[in-house]
View 1 (cartoon, rainbow, N blue to C red):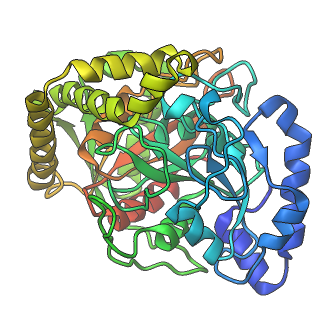
View 2 (view 1 turned 180 degrees about the horizontal axis):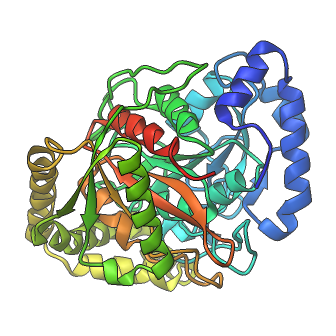
Length: 434
């Protein structure tokens, strides 16, 4: 869709002096000015003066970054997609924003989110067709990268809010392992399920983002510190040769469109031809039953996160948030604790029994192309289990549908083995038809 440089290329060009930060930022602003009236990816953008002031030396010098509007920024309002926070500017940056600024990155604008990252859509359209959803809840971030405004955008995923919109918009979406990226200063939906991740235009771009923005310490609740991994600014992350990949069958495959099913089959054949080992895999029913536990956890934690909103601003909450809180209040503490225990047991089980045999799973990122209309952001069913288990996942664009809309594939890795997943993804990306 765009010839603008991706993240890694832009970093190389700026470092070499072939491209100035000011030129890149000016191009980003011009691009946004031209297409934002129809795209509507941003709630608010930084002023030209603010953008210039943010430029400083570092690995991300001059890189414009889109930030999902549930992530706190001191110089731009953080509305959380809700009228409750209209015009509210936080007193502190979120931890990941502090890191981006320290690395030289420029906060270009706040991207549209569904209400509190949950269901009720904003106005953003799909860059490939304004009549279709960009997905959600990280709607604006996916659209802004796909449309060539920014080479990097931050999103969050509690069920499918990175993987699905990335697939619908035809970009790379990376959800790192649970707890691998900073969440302090991000409005929670469900603390045990919320992930912060990235939208980029290539696997190498996503690997660069993770290498720079992953946790350096474990001071946040349930945070982890991934090992540093090999990343060369010239060649990117090395592909994993001859990976062992499980072609996953799910109880929900009947929901796949014929074109999405064909993409998975074509991808599997490409991987076999490229030297990968592929085997079919079906997970036990206990894993899929875990999605019931996932909903219970999300409802309970959502009820806590929105307690004050529900009590003091009920008329300013959308029906989906009100419903979430009502359901959460009806669950018992025992039910919540038992669901969390099963979540942790299943995470250990998938590592012990399956990722000891496979480097990654191959599955769909969504039921098919982006649905028509802007009132629904699509079904997250093919992403939800990996959010529940906290395993890293990534979506890569593969081809376009008969309507010209993107269709992608999803790869899932083992918890804390994000580097391996990126290396498998680099292998897969090299085989994607151009």
